[in-house]
Image (cartoon, rainbow over all chains, first blue to last red; front, side, top):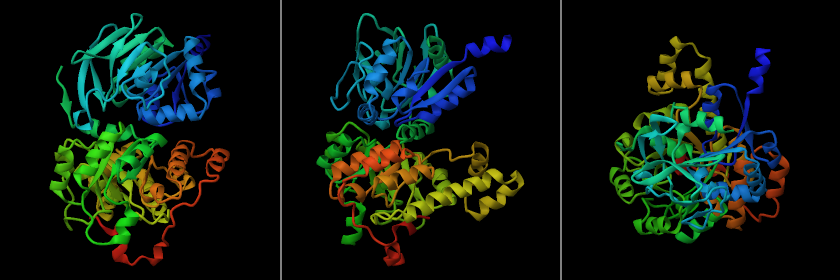
Length: 197
Length: 295
């Protein structure tokens, strides 16, 4: 009986596997337990999922592969069903409705405008620690050619800031961060996301 | 809160974000835009692609900073550039320009026949070539944040890239099956730092991302390297020396992503036009083999 109760709580989390830091998310989710992890390259693979992670990578590349391979509408529908979505770095850019560079076709899941590479080039990439209400304190955060949220709508909860720029936000079932929790050993942000799903 | 730049996590992490992607050689802003449009994860700005370096001969150096600047201004994806092996000043110049990654590359004429750069001392991350695990771990020991198997640049012939990727992965498997008391001797045999051999034993893989380079000319070549365990591919002459760079670039990006989807690979290989002509490796005399450069 206890076994069955537990198995009912296994969350099905998919990672969009087109380009980027995919294996890092798998490793982190596998360490957390009670999560079934799968990879998404085709629209039908979204069907059984409770949540989808759009990983860090190059937003231009991922956006082209999303569009060319018929994933744009299926991901938008997935979000409309209230399923969880976590976008990290490039994933944050893709979840937005507008960006400073037009090269990227966005998923438009969240009422945010994004400044791509907002903190500069690779030599300006940095590590820091963040205190995020309801999630944790001194959370290690790795920013790599990171974007920030330049404008957010009223229904967007802005969760964390660096140099007065919003770098983490939530709109109902959609969670985005400009940094890479998957490059650290701290899974509190991932746990917060899994609990949303 | 305190912000720190240039840490190993940041330098290696940048390469992790490139995984599953294609990095394309470009010689001007126009080519860089084509590469970005096609879905490249980064461009490598240089004065001549490897096949032209091969054809023209002479000393190959860091590109004119004007070209690199034009490429940096033309695209929003990361821009890499090549410095000669051991050329501290070329590397520092590229770093000062804000290039996102430096390739300490055997494609250029080496500046130092004994020593590579001490890459740990730089804020900008480096990628280096390797033909076997010993070379890979020596480069990591010096601070390389990303590797690429060398292949034979500018040939459009995949055979050397395959040889090097297989060699590196075979030697990793050897380490994982060896007992710990055999590892010092193995480290000595492959001329690798012992601590990094121990780390491979523990991780079962390289501690940094490893792309394939040197000979990728078709979508099938790119998919082959992914199946052999590459984290992504560099394409040098293969795109802009083909008959239709836009089509080749786009198809190679798709093939790198869907590397085991054969009907799709068949579809995207159709009607691309001629790939770059290519060179049979046995026709190259040893002094023409760029892969021999590096120590």
